[in-house]
Length: 83
Image 1 (cartoon, rainbow, N blue to C red):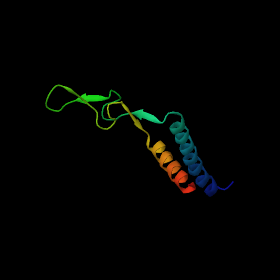
Image 2: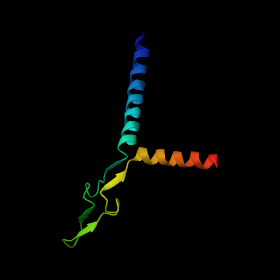
Image 3: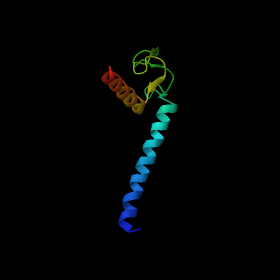
């Protein structure tokens, strides 16, 4: 195999393996911890020492992954086209 072919195949292989791994992660674990509240579902108010529910995750502590959001949108479009 030539050196040029080896240089082109390796990044493509790595990118496809990374994509397949992320797709499998989104299928198995569609939710991840919220970045703002770190999975607690609440955070401290800026002026008062009280806790407030997190607005990003609606107090659940989890958010849907970007890849799963894309998958859900694609599934919705495909389902609507079939009707």
